[in-house]
Amino acid sequence: MIGARRPTAATGSIMARRYRIKRLYQQVADKLMAMIEAGRFPPGSRLPAERKLAETFGVSRPTVREAIIALELAGYVEVRVGSGVYVLEPQGQAPAATELDVGPFELTEARILFEGEAAALAATLITDEEIAQLEEALAEIAEANERAPSSEVQDRKFHMLIAQATRNSAIVSVIDELWEWKMSSPLNERIFQKVRELGYRPRIDEHRAIIDALRRRDPQAARAAMHEHLGRLIDELLDATEIEALEEARRRVSRERERFTLARRLG
Image (cartoon, rainbow, N blue to C red; front, top):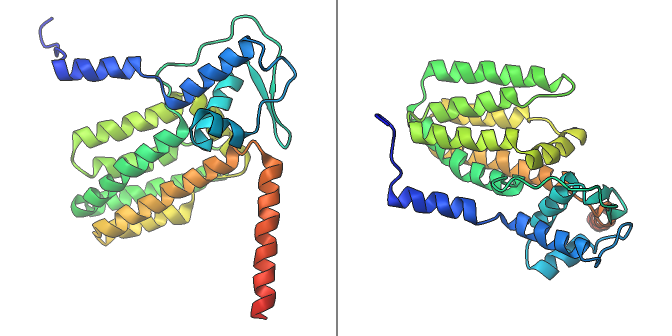
C-alpha cells in the first residue's frame, strides 16, 4: 500500500513483546482466578488479606489491589469495604480482562516520568500566549470541580497544553496515549471512579504551582511541581483502593496517638 509504513524488525519485536507479556497485576489476577476455579477459594469465602497475597505472589500491595479490582470487574469477587474481598458464585462466562489494560499505578508512574520532563522542557520554550491558555484551562478545571459528576476532560486539556509547548510531536503523542489509556481502560475507570467517590478532585493549587514555574521559565521548578502533583495522585489511588479499611483505620489511630503523645511532650 503506497504511503503505508512498514514495521521494522525492532518495532516488530517491541509489538510482539507488548502483546505477549501480561501486566503484573494480570498475572496475579490469573493465578487467583485459577485458585477460585479450582475450589481453593469457594463461593462465599474471603480471600486472604492484601498483605498476605502480596507476600504469596511476591508483588507490591498496589499490584494486588489492581488484580482484585480486575477480578471484581470480571465478576469473580466482591469488595466489601471494611470487611474484605469475597468470592462470588459463578455467573457463567466471565468477561476476559483486556490484555493491554495498563493499571493506574503503572500509568501514573509513567506520567510522572514523561510529564515531569515535558514540563521542564516546556519551561524553556513556552510562550506568553500558551501561559494564557493554561490559565484558561485552570479556570475550566475549577469550574468542573463544582459539578457532579466531575469530568477529567479539562484536566487532560491542561496537561496536553504543556505537552504541546515542548514543540516535540513524539512527546505529545506519548502523553496523549497515556491519557487515552487512563480514560478508556475499564480498570482505570473503576479505580478513578473510587477516587472521585472519595471526593478527590484536580487540585487547583498544584496546577497553579505548575503554571507559576512555567511563567518563570524555571525547568527545575516545573519538573518538581509536576512530580508533586502526580505524586499526590499516587497517594489518592492508594487511599481509594484501600481494601483493608479497618487496618487503615487502626494505622490512623496509631498515628494520631503518636502525634498527641509528641504534642504533650512538647507542651
